[in-house]
Amino acid sequence: LAIHPASPQVLYAGTNGGVFKTLDAGGHWTPIRLVDGQPPGRRPPAAAPKGVERAATEKGPVSVAQGSSLPGSAPASLLGAAAAPISSSAMQAAHLSSASSMSASSEPVRNPFDAAPASTVASATGADNAEAPAENPGAGVVAAFALDREGTILHAATSNGVYRSTNGGESWLPGRGALEAVSISAIAVDPTRATVVYAASEGAGVFRSMDGGASWAVFNSGLSNGDVSALAVDPGAPGTLYAATDDGVFRSALNAEKWQTASEGLHGSVSGLASAAPGVLYAAANDGRIFKTTDGGSHWAPAAPLPSKATVRGLSVPPGFPSTVFAATETGIFRSLDGATTWTPANGGLPGVGVLGVWADPSKSSRLYAATVDGLFRSNDSGMTWSPIVSRLGAHALAIGPGSGSTLYLGGAGEVWKSADSGRNWTAVPLRSGLQGTATR
Image (cartoon, rainbow, N blue to C red):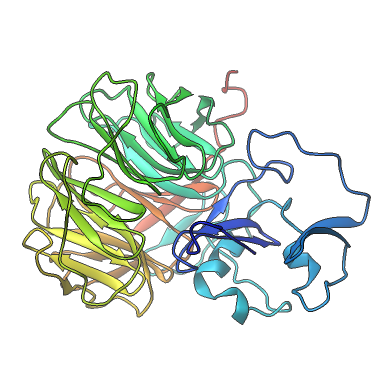
């Protein structure tokens, strides 16, 4: 375990399933993709002697023989296995329990989203019809989706770069260039220029593609912090993009090649953003506070506090209703109908667990979706009541297709689950499908 020296709420945990990072003192964890035991883009050092692992202690890194334990510490298998690939079961364990409550002998629950065959169909009741899944080390955990306005290109942000599909998720191609093997936290498509796509990472800043996600380049000039957790585009200002960072919010205008700070009135690091209307945005700070701007980020004002102080994991505004805001938190969902002046709980039917994300259906403003560690839920009455769609764990990202909204894409570990009938049936498509023989370098 490592604690950020300047931001104590930022922690890094090394487990036998890889390395994970939290921005809210353990409330929510995301994986950091490793390549040969090192962060993406770095050459691995000389290998340790056979049977020896590197482990972290209070006095610094030490070498530990495999199978042994450090005096007064956790087993070496938990401390020194940073080179192990990230597994969805480890990610699930991070959500379901804290490290202090996990015993070395406990078996992680199998994640049914982990690389099941493409032909597997999941029923709406959550019954697990899949065979034991095979490993899919290519794509990693899906953190976010972005669709272009016509719904023809679907982009998936993963812990191992960005993948794109032009055939409704049936096959995928990886993005080339600067972001290969980089863990991506957010992705956004310019609403007026479908070929312009942005991707954010927590550590490497922002990347931009000018060819619909085929190739990528670094887009960081002017950013003072590379930890970018969220992106938002201004619906009324083509080409204007906002980035949430540990140093506040930054803004990039149309055809600008440099970021400018847009954080006056904000306090602390920002973990969430949502566009509501031209120039109107909401931002969630890591300490649970929510802020609002009505002038495109030039000035921010604090919104009313949530009824219970909790880490905000996502914000959503139904299209056409800029005063309606939903906040997904570690204690449930809160709703505001007056532009974040007041908040009320909107948890009827949700389990008593944290909500990982909330999404408004662009085709029907009263329909919402919420992802929890107990599965995906839907509300048809603006969040007043919720019903389960599929009781599966490990999903963090959702995309809603254009038109009637009956097509859904759910992101898991190494694959995407697709439903063409509003969530009654699901088909798994590994993100590596379609790559062999088709990817070009």
